[in-house]
Length: 91
Image (cartoon, rainbow, N blue to C red; front, side, top):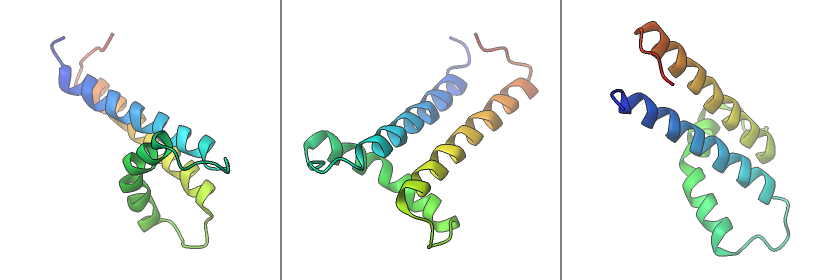
C-alpha cells in the first residue's frame, strides 16, 4: 500500500460516518445508558460540537446528526476528488 495516508483518511471518515449513524439509531432507545452507547456518544461528541457550531441552534438533535453525516460524506467526496486530481488510483 503505497498511498496509505489517503486510505487512512478515507477510513477514518467512513468510521465516523458509521459511528454517527449508530448514534442516530440508538438515540431513541429508552434504556440507552450502557457502555456501548456511552462510548459511541463520547467518540462522536467532538464532531457534533463542530457541526453544531455552524448549524443554527433551533435544529433538533436528530437533524444535527443527519447534518453531521452529510458533512462527513461531503468530506469523503472532496477527499476522493482530491486524490483523483493528484493522479493516484486507489483500488
